[in-house]
Length: 77
Image (tube, rainbow, N blue to C red; front, side):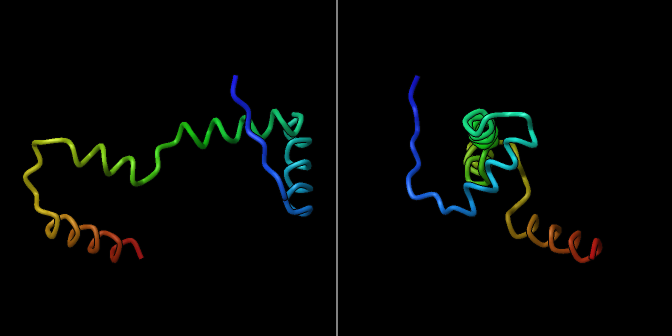
């Protein structure tokens, strides 16, 4: 199985990660592997938009959708 090594981790970052691992009842390695697995399993906005851009069938234009999104955000504010 491949491995990853991260060098030059600032001491305060290392401390926080060790504390979070301990609070989760995990070793630092287990905690970081869990975090990386979650991160890799969650698509980025760019990935979602790329997938959505390849789909057909929509009939609304971008300007129409953007205007309605703006209106929804104004109502929510």
